[in-house]
Length: 442
Image 1 (cartoon, one colour):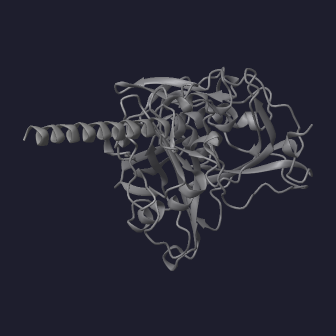
Image 2 (cartoon, rainbow, N blue to C red):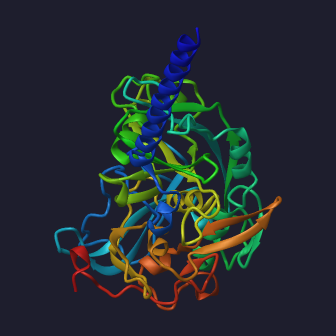
Image 3 (tube, one colour):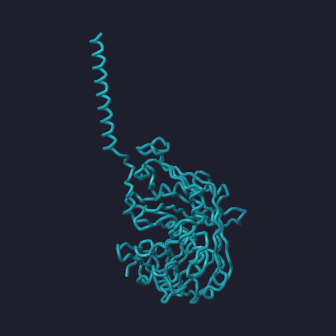
């Protein structure tokens, strides 16, 4: 009996030792083999937040040899069913994509012409989008600590956006009002009798039902906080766009925009926002991040009920940015302020301008473009890119934007306070070199 007990004790010790060795090996394996899709929490600190230029309607800035030499504006772009808009043009020396000289530049903007004195109110639905990362079996993936990889942009976050100065009035040097409305009043100050007429373009926000986007395995990365909670997602831009936009006509509900269109949550007359929570896009590899948003449109064929006009759903994707994610201070509605400002000034993503170059004197990073992208001019700058607004229990961060006179190469600027930027008039104090050839070549 004693011998049997000794054997049992010995066997138990051997099993315990084997179990401890197995656990130790498993622990060592967990330490030496982290999730290949998990990135460091501080990964974004060195990333360059930016936006993405999405395709729009056909370019409207062709060379005009005998164009008018004075400004003219018309009611709207003909032949499309879309958001309220007006068209105009300006004169400036420049070159087109093929290096042909061009002096007349056409544009379309949201609302009504400045001289009209009309107030235009545009519905601005906000669609919160939950993003889920999927594993190889098509289920919601988990981090090594067991956290399910889901980031929600629920009604609370959407309401924080509604409460921001994008949709609520604030005091600017140009007057009291919504951010984009006051930006354009400053931009066209000389055409509104120095701000005395009642020309306004206002957004009327509403939070719509949430949608869900599932990102397939192999097209995502993530970062965790030190407490194990999710800090951010990085998603391949092409995969994200494919899951956002309807691929074919007739539209079905397999994509986020398609589902919102079929449900009537967004219409062609709206400026729609698809809001995500700390989800950023990369182009090819994670080190080619971070796209915080883009403005674009879903183009659909006409139908009998709209006179068979081409339908253009004006929209933007924007990420809510939690404080401290990026080293340059971009936070909360910075991306959305950028995208909506560009939508106001270029709703159909086809407003051509003379080639322009914006370069940070600190980092040397630059933007070279020939589109009327008012946010892109400023996003590369390290000095005064943001404008802080205390409101409704938060401090919101708007991106400063370039004004039309900067793209017109006008000196002095006819905008409010002779500025080239808004809300901070000191963000842009000089014009781009020019006239530049295609690709910003001298």
